[in-house]
Figure 1 (tube, rainbow, N blue to C red):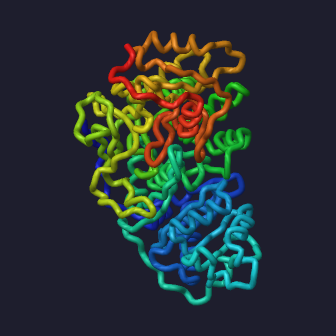
Figure 2 (cartoon, rainbow, N blue to C red):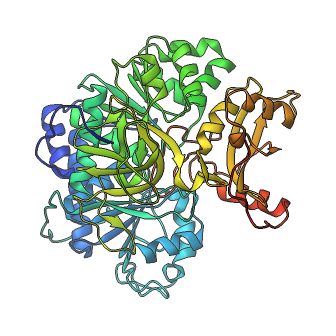
Figure 3 (cartoon, rainbow, N blue to C red):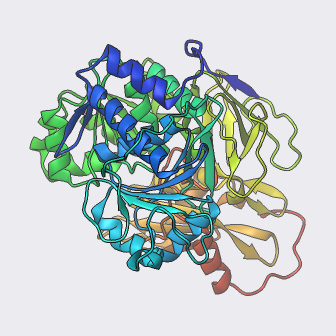
Length: 556
């Protein structure tokens, strides 16, 4: 089954520089707003050009790799665009990286320049690059174990070690102009199912992704997008470029604090929220008066379960809640529901592909085509797909990208993400999709969160095992949950083992919640929970005795 984007055709491929220039000329009053700064697009453009000139003077080469340690700030946004204007590649460093993780990223991405705009991360840089503590020239480094790293600079702060990027740049350096096919950024996957992987995304891909997202939402110059997702995630970069293309404003902050966040939403009259479902519902549950902070909101973008999305829709009846299937490899959303979709499709599916994107479903084992409604491996191709993972061969940008995710396309071409291919449980030859079982368990009124994994079994090779978090004070037994599943599922899909938990192993910026599709090397999926299933599989395997020879048929 095959699906194509349904929105207006994409215009000519763009670059970060072209997009910022057009916005600054056509909508000079819109821009970036943080709790401490308000910068119109014109200032973002000139600030980015100045930073690009300074980087060029310091010797950053065409195609150079610039690691960026920043928060969600004006300086951070300017540096992303500065790299693009210079023809360099921006490599945002996820917050929370320790010294070892930072050094691995610098080596893996072959970084030649390290830029810090967040003073709180200077100590990390000094620990990772001890040569900065001596008399070494920070613009001509020779770092043990990082032979490619040549320079380290800081923006907007006095610091011992790195060079000040706002020093007099001296003679002007020649500027380069990136092309749509040049790599713009390297973004890391969240690593739900394994080690995070760096994805090389071109200017054309990230601009096309933003343009298609804004087209599907219906953004215009009056819109104000609020997002505090980290700058190193496509969940921030995509909406940023979407609102930039539309000529509107983005409101952000360096991290989430409920009181300050809702003050921002109210003061800036935000019209679009990019958030996790519990953020809104928890705020209103704690203080119903907070509802007036959301009076201006008309759209909520969320990667939640249908139940969680429905809860947001119920507390924000004047807004439209949208969800989709997203992946780092597709520069964010590959599919998204639409404002005019009926509630069942808008909250219960992942919608149609965005403009310029194609999605199809193939047999996970053979790669052969599957009919409508048949679950299989999700494949994506189109204008927004990545060039390749760091350390791997470049892929053909026109080729299909086979994700690690299960899904199906319904008769109308809407995608339903069903979890990871690795989450399939093979019960005596029968394939069981873990999200199908999770959805049934999540429907129990006392279940807060659930993850289903494969457990070894002496008779059937594998059987479903469920890890369940109950609401506080609930008194539910494993047998009762199994009976609940038996009312809706064939016997071989009912969890053979049930374990109760109060916390989850999480990956990246994941949020705990129902389900566990999360984001591994590909899809961010509907649940967006970030629960790592590997440790859960290891735990149940350790608890059970070694498998004996399997039988050929599942239990009936």
